[in-house]
Image (tube, rainbow, N blue to C red; front, side, top):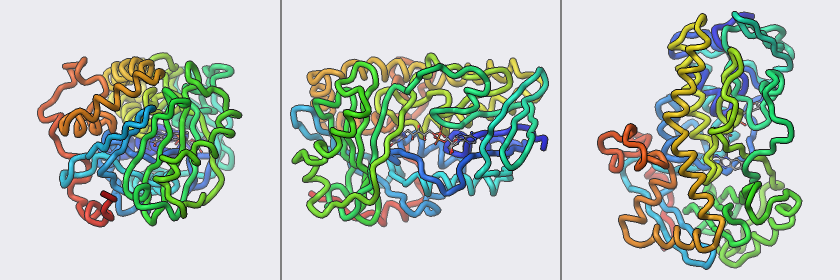
Length: 417
Ligand SMILES: Cc1cc2nc3c(=O)[nH]c(=O)nc-3n(C[C@H](O)[C@H](O)[C@H](O)COP(=O)(O)OP(=O)(O)OC[C@H]3O[C@@H](n4cnc5c(N)ncnc54)[C@H](O)[C@@H]3O)c2cc1C
């Protein structure tokens, strides 16, 4: 099989790349080792940045059964100071939660409708490249040639290994646990909670609301410089965290785990990751694009997938040097300053004082509460203040995503208090 671009991985990065390519008239084939719908261990939280990308890709939230818009975020400092941060009402969606098993399958449906050839259940097991093309070996499909490959195959990126640019022993910057709960109380069912626990800093625990009195509950730790660094210690900590009165109180007495917990690493070093090798461009977790402050990576996966596709489309099949230079420029422009800002803030959050100060500042006034929530959920870039080249009109007052889909706002139950 010969295609214009072969995309490896059908998560948000691969789907965004494939949809962008198909819409630009390129013959794109996408390969994933999993058969969809497939789960991905994740908090399922969608930032404003992710929502805007999803909207422009043409995703309809109604196609995702577990879609839940979030209007209120509650942040708790290590000393117990709790601040409620309201997101703007009636102006579209600034934060949402959607189970990855449904979200990723719905995105692949968008890709299929756009004309992408999808081969799920077919792992890529071999790669070779010369000056003109990349040749993939795909189990159950055979040999696939293409001028470019976009590798969106996740944290462990087999393509990175096949291309010879994987770093031995790399385990990611974060490691995170998640577990689904049902029959949660009204607080967990309606609000998004972030708990800065003293023993997790600069990591945190969360409860993200899902429809039907369910919640995605979990916690993440920083691998280097955090207080809990070993995955074995995380396992022991999980029941202890769930029993802490402020967490147990939010989940409610009737909360029951739906399934065993899962854990997965989070790569967050876009400043150092190898972004391409020959005619292969890496995107999403495969290029370690996650936010080092929060561990969020869906928005960055959608963005880098799109940017890789745009670079390839603009450069054409015969100018790989231009394609990778364009991709580098775009990634630098969109992510580098924010990564540096996140790394700085993460350092401040390592200490109780830093985390306490951040929550206190966030709660100072209605203005700080509103804007901290929008900043935290990446309504505008993390380091926007330091990068005037990215300023645009109404960036602090613009609407959220899916403004027209008001039916999703109206079906939300009201929260407590
Ligand atoms: C516990 C946890 C909580 C998180 N919470 C959030 C959150 O709330 N919000 C947020 O924005 N981010 C969150 N993240 C990060 C987010 O999950 C990732 O950044 C995101 O999934 C990256 O998307 P991706 O498309 O790059 O990779 P993935 O979603 O991992 O997709 C990679 C795909 O590649 C496929 N693949 C792998 N090997 C092969 C192969 N050999 N051949 C073909 N296909 C292959 C896989 O099957 C998979 O479908 C969390 C992560 C963890 C671990």
